[in-house]
Length: 393
Ligand SMILES: Cc1cc2nc3c(=O)[nH]c(=O)nc-3n(C[C@H](O)[C@H](O)[C@H](O)COP(=O)(O)OP(=O)(O)OC[C@H]3O[C@@H](n4cnc5c(N)ncnc54)[C@H](O)[C@@H]3O)c2cc1C
Image 1 (spheres, protein in one colour):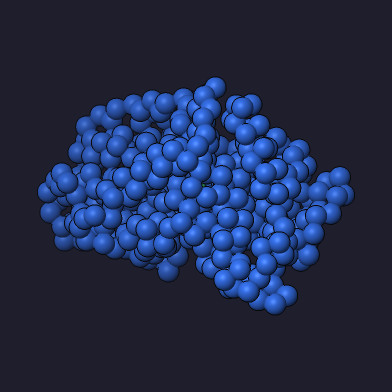
Image 2 (tube, rainbow, N blue to C red):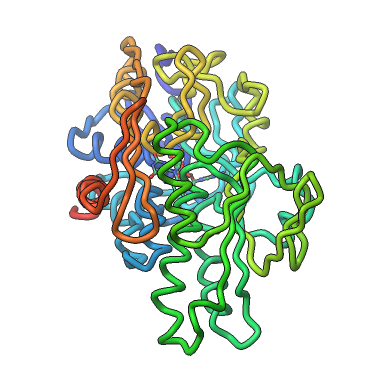
């Protein structure tokens, strides 16, 4: 807890009483924190956002972008604009560690940034070491910003003579399922106008478990049917051993011809979190308690995919990063001002609205299952409402 005045304040020529909250990463939880402090500023607190990307994509709308249903600017939050509108100091830099004794954030260019309270919402990175060739030949979905650059490059090649035609996805979670179906929707829609017959493309998804393993049977069955109807080959319970330039090889030795491979599996914690010397779980994620404070250091918070909620473990999903925003903002304010933080109890289940490629989606929550165009409309309304909060400034 920051009970004593900041030693960094005097050094920087600030009023002694001003506390520095440094937010690392412009993820789903932190955009809420920016808005919360912007709408209720406190002269005793200065908020700084350190981010390596100046715009941040909203994961819920990503499949719609891939499907060609949304423009890029509809799916991204402009962090420069958000910081300007909320009176937040913006530092465009990549964090590489923490010097917790000196309460400084370490940056890739060698600079350091003082903090009284620091919060990490930096997402995950792909862990490709378990699939030979995946880093070389695969298109990884995380981090999302990098994925879209690679996806744009792929789109540029898809309609060329001799361009990629056999598309394979690896990973049967919601992200992987939505991506392959969305890409198929896009290609079948745009291929004729680009002089390519839609039949030229083939699609497959390989998943190490059953499809959508955390969802109920009816949802799984509905997606199996969707894949069959759309002519996307589904290979379940097959671990991928290797990705080659022209094929995906499973552990059983099956070879799936592939010109383009989308990898949405094996997410890992960012490696630099080890440089924080915080208590990390066995996968390298920052262990936090119910107040979102790290277990070993109450001046460090973590939220979203990079955090491991020790008492209430939840799957890595944007919805939990979004939900963490309000309690995180509240507790950062409390702790910066020397007050007691309050616990957060994330809900056990969440409503997942998973698109089937076009403007159709399947709803899943516990045993609940529903599907229809209306589900997609509900999803779109929710997503757009959330985005408006950070775009209509
Ligand atoms: C295709 C796809 C679809 C998905 N759809 C859904 C969905 O519909 N619903 C759902 O709940 N979840 C969905 N997910 C999961 C969702 O993407 C993640 O759970 C969510 O993005 C996590 O948010 P976050 O705030 O933890 O991190 P992110 O959104 O990844 O944000 C991390 C931020 O930190 C910044 N950053 C990273 N490292 C550093 C550093 N060292 N220094 C400074 N800044 C840094 C990045 O630039 C980025 O802005 C989907 C995932 C995929 C792949």
